[in-house]
Length: 310
Image (tube, rainbow, N blue to C red):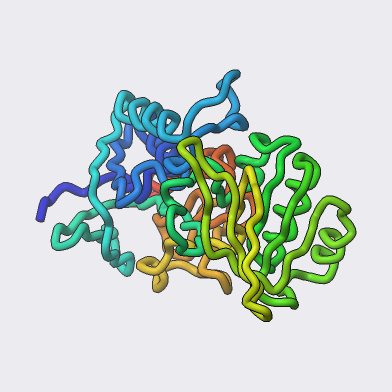
């Protein structure tokens, strides 16, 4: 174990964690950031980003994360490609572990994000960003006047289908059951949208593709076992996200879905522990909002350290 106590340790290297690192480094805090298993977070699975300000012609997700990482390092961030596996925030300094390695910090920014749930069918990972997506507001623009499908039965599925219907020529909404978890108002809005076609009760069994990407899907009617093939340009999975919050549970408040509840912008119930990005955002889930929250967390961590003479 090292006796060094970091001013601020940041867990996660998506836009929230990297922005927090940039601000903390510029404040002279010499932050250390732990990249975890997926350096760059969900953006590493996004081929093109056209809604992040400052890039007239868009930028790829991996490129944006690589550039933000390089910027964080240039201003004084130490990036470690290690995963935090356990924490103990019950006393000061705060304790974290990467396997058996103990780490001490006066403040921590949790920016571990949320993982989009997928169907678990073959070639999902290969086709992600090539016709398959988990975010309509991120990727819907690329399917303007094209034919797409949305899988899911909750509010997020209805919202994504309705959003895509404004851009796409035709939207199929596929759900395993003939009843929905979605609220009445969201369901009715989707049902009243002319170019949304409901397919229930159906399950997607196969993603069809060629060298360029997705070309269609195979679905099966769960009542009749009848199989159908649909030609598609885009396939959106809207079956929820799993916040990566499990190891922090004793020291933060969680909502019913596992998202960390922030108070006073980015504070948690534990002094010195702050939160930023999708891990605390069940609503927007955008790179730009995550980055903004990372900025807030770093500024609040800086003030916490100053106020406590740390």
